[in-house]
Image (cartoon, rainbow, N blue to C red; front, top):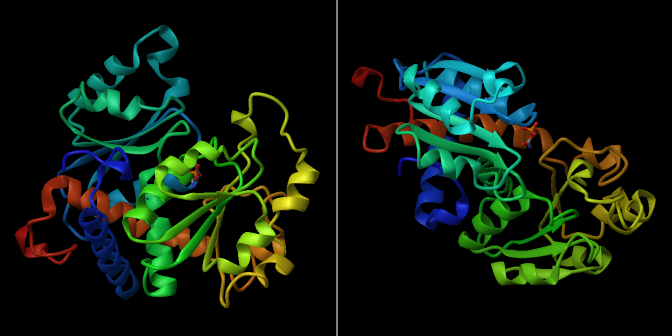
Length: 314
Ligand code: CP
């Protein structure tokens, strides 16, 4: 594969191959923080047209750990402000030698558009409410490492599903790997029509929790709401906020995930976010390994001798 645009496009086997490669990188990282030479001579450009803390920095770090050269493109100080188009911007960056472009944009399909107009590999780092494939992969990796499997688990995605690209990538990834997926939130944020994606829709979190091995608590995306949140923030927290009391309603060792950034006290209490069931910071750590795996595999390393272990080949 040349691009990573969404988990909808990947087969079960391709997803498992990425997770296995990420596990190898995680083990290498645990042993040593030394760089591996796998992407020496390659250039990775980060094109973020929306803000980011985790995704942008972990892609930069992942590229550096693989010995690639990295460059951040900052949309706000670029010639986009003079009217240069999105496609021309990307083609100019490609002309500087970019081998891989990591693209985040508020418009669904923006990375797919670039993939049609440049020759380098495109990685979708989040396109509007469509997909965020590396977040989906790091969520899968975190679940698999914590629970030892994904097949047969029940995973609830809780909250603002309508506006969530993380939800869509989770749905594709989890269902392909054999999990039962329940979408839970108010009908205003969780349309019943999403059942067409192969998951269930439920509106009462307290009834869903006893079936759950994992809950992935999604942020209310205030910036993408057309109007004020309905129900109100306090009503939402009361009905769907993850409290310690609710954690105890889940199956034993309920795993609590949240992609971040989190609205503390809205989708989950600080006690849960920082408590023993939370894997929120493990997700961030695993994100580095997943992004190393994606960069490595897209740069054509799949056939080489193994994740980062082929230093003699470089
Ligand atoms: N989870 C996630 O995508 O975080 P950032 O927006 O900080 O990259």
